[in-house]
Amino acid sequence: MTVKPAIGIDIGGTTFLVAAVDTDGRMVASQEHETRAADDPQIVLRRIIAAVREVLTEVGWNASDIAGIGMGIPGLHDRERGVVLTSPNLKWHNVPVAAEIGQALSTTVKMDGDVRVAAIGERYFGAAGGCDNFIFITLGTGIGSGIFIDGKLYRGPAGYAGEVGHQTIVENGPQCGCGNYGCVEALAGNGGIVRRALQALAGQSAPILLQEVAGDTAKITPAVLHQAALQGCELSRQVLEDTGRYVGTAMANLVNVLNPEKIIVGGGVARAGEMILGPLRDTVKQRAMGPGAAMVEVISAVLGPRAGVIGAAAMAMYDLD
Ligand SMILES: [Zn+2]
Image 1 (cartoon, rainbow, N blue to C red):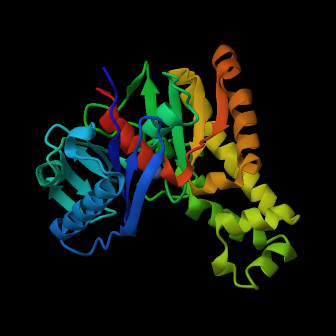
Image 2: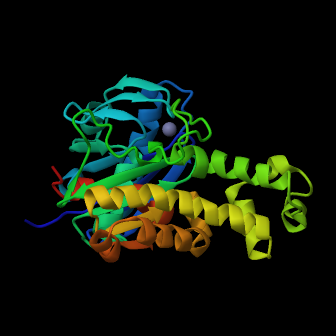
């Protein structure tokens, strides 16, 4: 079967990205626009359809030239019917996305969660290098994942699989957005990282960090901590290394359960690179059991913010189910 190029669409709460993606995973044309999620979903979908038409015109592709359209949308989906059941980020409920877009553009539409399509992107055109058993995690506001087992994306019977951020790693740890205490997300998500930095600042001086935010600790973010750490701030370096250890503890649990070949780390916080990845890798190797720990590679994602749109297109190109 010859693979055809496809259109990928990655919808976030702030912006959406539409791209024409060739069969080598290259974005040959793209447009990014504000989502304006406060608008009626029909209006948002019409803006997306207009952007797809412009991208198709730019590359000179007709509906018959493409495999279809793939979409990454945060939230819970009925993939059979192509309906977004609920998306807190977009404030969408029961939106028939596939029918609306498919009819307007005369092509097939597939959809899945935003982190899962990013995992698909890394599998076909990124860090996974086609490997069949891997866990892709994103570190950011939340900690999410896409899990491939024996070449298939594992979604779970109700679509809830992959909530790796809500593994309890500290029994009486801080409360998480999910209601539980001590989830890895509560410690190593953006909010948890900043909270630990503020706690550390109460008992330790960090002149470089304070200079970085001009004395306003409300401006501390993981990116600021990374900058300060690069300039020699010990507190910032410690907070980021602890982040790697917390995530590594959660990943060691998964290595013991799933025996993945690779753990691929993406998302905004992962831009701190080896400062987080190093302790994460060491913790996995120390805590997971022998053979699984020995074989698993802990590596950076390579597609960055393009993983979602490229993965969405890959989902249209390849039959994943
Ligand atoms: Zn949680």
